[in-house]
Image (tube, helix red, strand yellow):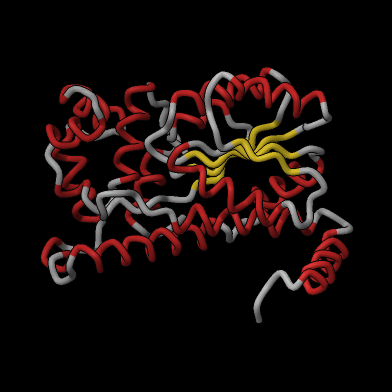
Length: 277
């Protein structure tokens, strides 16, 4: 388990049966892991969109006498003190936060079996639908772009609306067995609905999300977390992007003709003068 703030919070929550409201609080705490030890129960409640008593009940559910005891525990277990945080400006803090997220991801990948399982599922699906809406659309598009060089049929789903279920139906009719979803905050309701529909249609759902407590978790067969940075006005997603490339590598390893496809592309690209050296 990672020694990062987010990793310690994940470890704290493991093994507890949490209500939907409590999972929402846990999800918020993981997202704001570096800030949580310095937040009051009222501030945390506002960030999570729940009531202050819900925060208190959440702390008790984790085995603490109340939220002050939980916050004291977090402050004692977080090595970065408030004065140390103040040594860096907000831009540096954002970068350092992403470095922590990447370190956490590296430690998570010490057990490669979830990624290897995902690679097998994605490689075997023909076609392979890749879903990502709003904030996650760039992640889905990047994966689909590179995946199309080694996978024979990748279908990007980066637009919502009434046609989304139709496109999922078309993929299933064509033989799809799995779907890859990139889900980042804030989570569009239609992504949650689309995953529920995909599973009802028989697709195995592999999800990249910022936390195991994300709203999409209940509709995922395999969720691999990669934290987002929250230090700037808009979230940063270095870890989810890198995890997407790792999944791409794992999928390519399961495709026997992946290297041949890449070499064929290079030959055609050279003949067309596609790139400037």
